Length: 333
Image (cartoon, rainbow, N blue to C red; front, top):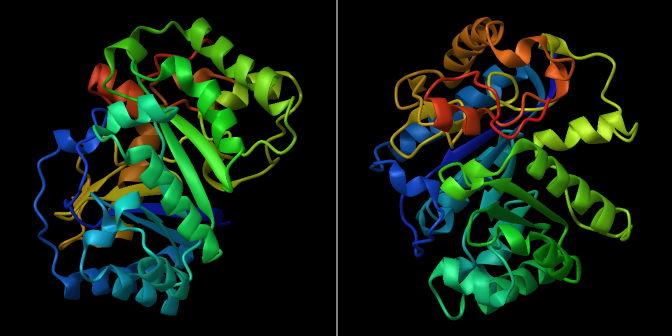
């Protein structure tokens, strides 16, 4: 039995126009070292191999800014030919009528941009007085080409108290989804108690989702599922392969490829399991998935009744303890 979808986040370049204060990418030292010819081979291999495991394969091209990679449109077009779904995670500075037209022609499923707060806060974090207006303009251009747009918000000390305000701002824009995640290296976020974080999630649900039926908020955060399940709002599927029915993608429904080919279980976990420059990605993933399942049996999560559809954020546990399969520090169970 196959899983429904498998997602690969491919950091195709290190080039970037920004120097955002919360960027986890800066801690990694990469060089672009996979040839274009090998990149095409990787796509060929992925198209063949992951049909054994998943009904749908999707590659999210990111960076840096993937639109600064000179052959990005060729890769997107080739994925389309091979039947692989694509999305792009990039910067607003690269969005123009011309680039948006090319993205539309490549049939991407969506374009993800980042938002870090209301205008003043967003500009401070982005270290630019024009960042917020550039974001709005990029959204406008993408939507004129009928491209779905999602916004990602990274919770940190600088914007933790502005999340609800920013969700309400974004709900008034012409976007398709808004989601947030936690800054895994921010000391302020690490010191938030599990109960405080639970209450944060519940406040957002009660004050935003229940009061706005048109809210664009997407419940990406895995810990959402626990209180929603307890309230009888979330109903997980009854059956699924590999004993999981959602939750953290690590060892189950996703991985990351870095610019030099290193394969990570997740782009936020600097834990090398192979290198796509010379390893077959699928074989690397299957080997890691078996090791992950064994390690998971020894974790605190393994005895939890929510194991199948939660497992928290493995990246947060890893950064805190420097080991995989560690409990999410904000889990209140």
